[in-house]
Length: 393
Image (cartoon, rainbow, N blue to C red):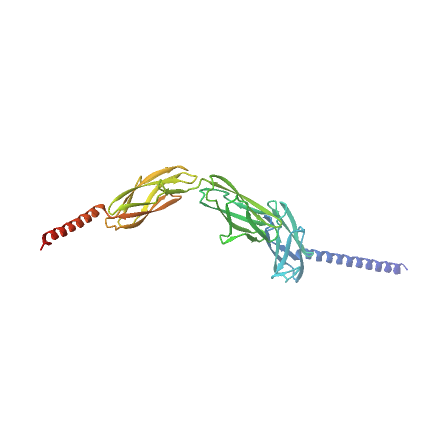
């Protein structure tokens, strides 16, 4: 009986130890399998922490490496990306959520991440997960505070020149929104001022389309009225959409207007002269602008073999509203026949000029008139003499 009881106990012991061994072996296999999965697949990207600005797009290159001896079908997902950030996982030109990797091989995928324009400055952490195998931690550092606006700027907002100057400003229009925007370009210049807009130095436009986070070069030309007074003038310009407006305040400094008038003291623009003779013509140069005129030179266009000499030959300066007297000595050609001749007289400065046309009549010399009279008298006397001498026969 004792032998039978001992055999029964021994059998129970064997059954118990066998079950424990099987259980231990199964647990060990499960742990080994889990441990093998953790080491089987690796995710790799060379840049795991990137500093960007709002609106920038990041393209991560990610390698999925299979270290095991069997093909792995790996699920890929990005976890922890803010809701208003846009991202896509691609491989081979397709959007993917899973990728199959052969033993001891690797496959490549790309993660495109678009940082919104309206975003706070700071650190953003997220991960790329490879199923239950591994994770790849990534960090995006947004280097400045994001906005949702339009930026309209120029490196040089103030220019100086005469009233006849065309003032040219080079500006940049930046669309810092998430949508393509049609901007209306307009100005609030003082009455009489002309403002024109050109995009990328092309034709004049009134509006321009700008893609998200893109820049357009805007050329702004400003022309002042003819008789504008010297001073500083503000030229506000705007780029406007339905949701945003950006302004730029341009400044134009007018040094004065340049204008003058060349005439005679009486306003009479005609005279007369004899062939080969000389004639002094009195001229008046008047500064009709608002800025001083300097270094005024005088010139002429005359008929062939005529000449004009000015005294003085050059005027150093005339203040606004003032006049200067000039004498033009006109000398006619000796071969000039009777009739009217046109002579153009011009006063010129680096900024402006004025000219006037003179009509000069050439008269026959009085000497030839008296000679003609004498010849006629001599002819009459000769006829009279002949008549008296031979008339009685």
